[in-house]
View (tube, rainbow, N blue to C red):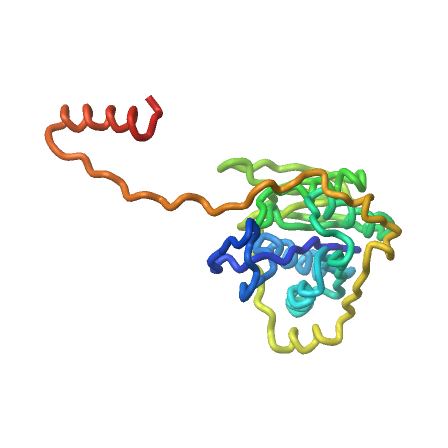
Length: 257
């Protein structure tokens, strides 16, 4: 099987995010593989081991993403591709990323494409479905189980506390939800092997794309941290007095009644 994984480099979930000049301050910040993409990488490796083929992990970004791609190779992926847009794309969005990925994938004869359900830094969940639409292939999001039988796939997806089972055919794009699997840690032999595995770096020119072809469709107006959560209030006195005070607070402070 010809399997591809869409991977994004994101902030470490344990990092404290700082805003400077209306932008996220990346100085000294720790970056990781987007956690949902780790599920996608693990599932791709398991599918390959069960059905044969190879796994290629792709990332769009700058050269710093090479570290995360090497980690994916150490986990067990066969190849990695970095599409470096640092010099060509100043402000991209989900359309930009999806357009670039789809252009790369359009002639790769992919049987299965996996990505994370969402990226923890943006949370839009748009890139995977956009890529599938551009490639004109079926897609299923938020999956928690994947079974491949020849050219058929049975997919279980999370639907707000319940599950939905879908039967479809390959080629197929799916996005991974927490619970799909337990991503492995790179082993020492895996890390050593990763150094010798192919990691190709491409630019927009290599895909016959111009800057205007991938120009963002959206614009970020402002980035800010959520307001600090205030301490709660404990009401005292008789029940009737508490109810009266609660109604007053809901009206004067919360402004919901």
